[in-house]
Amino acid sequence: MSHQPSGNPRIAIIGAGMSGIAAVIKLRKAGYNNITVFEKSEKVGGTWRANRYPGLSCDVPSHWYSFTFAPNPDWSHKYSYGPEIQAYMEKTAADFDVLSVCRFNTSVEALDYIDEQWRLVTQHGDEEIFDIVISATGILHHPSKPDIAGLDSFEGKSFHSAEWDMEADLTGKRVGIIGTGSTASQIIGDITPRVAEMNVFQRTPQWVAPLPQRAYSKFEKTMMRLLPFIPRLLYWLNYGMFKLVFGPATTGNKRAQEKISQICHTHLEENVKDPELRAKLTPNYQAACKRLIFASDFYPAMTQEHTNLITERISQIEAKGIRTADGKLHELDILILATGFDSSAFILPTKVTGENGSDLAEFWGRAPRAHRGVALPNFPNFWMLEGPTSPIGNLSLIMISEHQIDYIISMLDLMGQKGLTSLVPTRQAYDDYNNAMRERVKDTVWVTGGCDSWYIDESGLPNLYPFPPQQYLRDMHDPHENEYEATPRRNIAAE
Ligand code: NA7
Image (cartoon, rainbow, N blue to C red; front, side, top):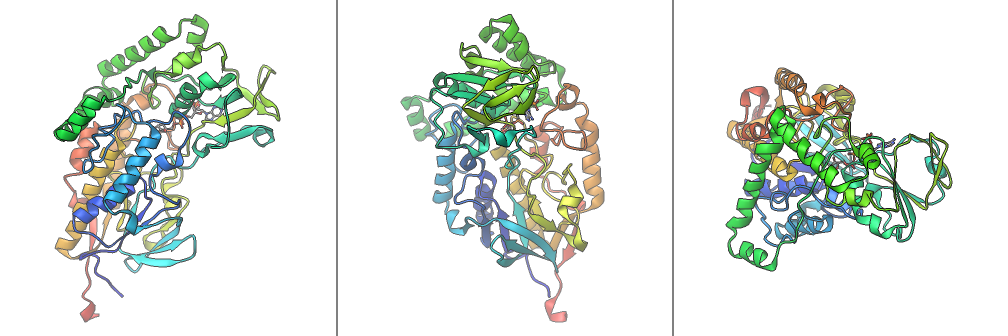
């Protein structure tokens, strides 16, 4: 049996987070309206729905962390707080009628490519057929819990930052937090003033740049509403700044790296006067090697009388608290695990089976890669948003997703124009693309900076785009037809 995806293909989108919402809106605008979104939870929003910890905010400027098709003159701050972004996601999904195609509380168990179609099986055992699958699951959505002896024996409340216990009252409590990444720094900055004791268990110090947060005035918001070009201008200005400073710093430019180092050093020196504490907070690797943290209230929180920075190795967790290698028991009422995420899962554990029985989990191992961040050999008509080696880091992921969606739309258009049933990148194109990245990534600060981070997977290399991000964005608008194998539509009448 054959079918004709080239006309109005049946499209399944997995995930109703930022990328999934954008995909529905842009696909519809391009004329593709046979869409179903499968969302494991009860509403849209993805990472902004799942994360509810105190202090949650986005360190990418609000007007850049916005959809191009839904500029928002009402952002309250230069850097948005989590609940406001979640409200924006929900409003955008409602305004653009995304909700009507979403199937909530429905996670996808399996995807099988059979006879040039994708058979999708949900957690409820329902089966449906699609021509095109777009994975919009996001990257960091599987909490990673530390493998520390005795974790379950702790008597107080203990939870991962992404599974925040909304019932937990931190006021006046002895709180412990494991981790000092972006998440921990936001939590520490927010909760320290109201807890009795803030115990920060740091394995590796992080470089922290100041976050120039401020509220937008009523006048500014009115102007942005009256003159819609202002939010648009801010979008491109913020991107321009990133292009000038941050992009080059991470991809090998020594002067830009030096600039970032200087900013972080000054921030530390101005805020932490005690030389012993400052030494403990000073990393021994280059700034921006790990994902750079932007936070202005982290260091002030670390210098509070009731804050303890514990750098001794954790030996075990006990009923009453955390015991460190020096034998000391740090008694706690609440333990927060800000220990990050599994950054190699993407759409897994959904079982994805491509051509000739290729299994995605096996194909990837623990070092996932993709062709141009969006496609995979042996997995025809399967596209990814924010897939492996997409440009991420301190960049607006909304911007990246939107460009990837444009690329996928060009490919769908190509299928329509040429009457194709399927498109799949060739193994050669995939290898060439990834070999070039493997070579180039060695010169980036993520490798030369001398740190370990969630960017680095089991290949020993960072799963990141190592060229200037603008090159990626350009490529997303220059589809590379010769990198794909196409299957012409079969003539049903002749079969
Ligand atoms: P990160 O950036 O992966 O940070 C996790 C933190 O937890 C980091 O400080 C780790 O120390 C620490 N960690 C992890 N496991 C342990 C164990 N077993 N013992 C002690 N300390 C541990 O996650 P975040 O949630 O902060 O941020 C993730 C991304 O979300 C962020 O980059 C933004 O893009 C948004 P380590 O440095 O590994 O020594």
